[in-house]
Image (cartoon, rainbow, N blue to C red; front, side, top):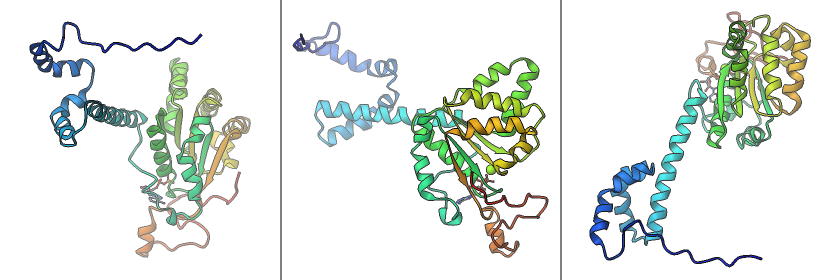
Length: 297
Ligand code: ADP
Ligand code: MG
């Protein structure tokens, strides 16, 4: 049988009654300390301004309390965001608003905006960004990573070199388990620049261990300048590369970026580089790899 809800008597602070105005004065004097104790730092710091504004708007007590709480919640959320952004260790600030989709017509803005909802992070899916240097892979990784942080997910940004360097070191020092656990922890792990530099021989096995551990648990956002068909070369082992791709690609969204380096756009405009038909104007310059074959996975 449902119990009828009883009217809870209004709580009164210990020893305080309406007939004791002096006590209220004492409480007001202790307000700062009480706000500190309750960790209501924003209310404490902005109290005069908030109360003045509440009075100006002629808020009743309940409205004024909501007004104060909203200020505290906003400040706590701001702190949480900036802390989570620091923990994520993004190399720089890049946003989706700052991404010029017109400059990279091979990217479907709808697909990127859909990724920005972070449903894929909630589902533990992966995202693979493929494309030649300078086309905005890292920019998109940071921008999507920030969206995930804003939605409350734990995010860590790293490069393939840093990650695999740490795992190799862990293996040598007998701390592999600790390192694997560390990289398995964030809900979203962003691995930038796979394929740019040669990896150590055991790197493929270690990478496989990490990807297996994260499989269907947490998401991986990975970028590479090499098409996945070349990942056996990247990892130096066909079997390991196939096993990595099997898990990575199972629940994944692939974004292929073709076209020219954004970095060289200005230079090209100034006539320093000649645009090449259907490919990156970087091709063949200073040992930079030629553009990737236009193969979707
Ligand atoms: P990649 O990681 O593919 O080599 P980056 O993301 O590092 O390329 O892009 C190189 C620079 O150009 C970065 O400063 C990035 O913010 C900028 N950039 C690349 N593409 C775009 C774009 N479409 N709109 C705005 N800035 C871009
Ligand atoms: Mg990059």
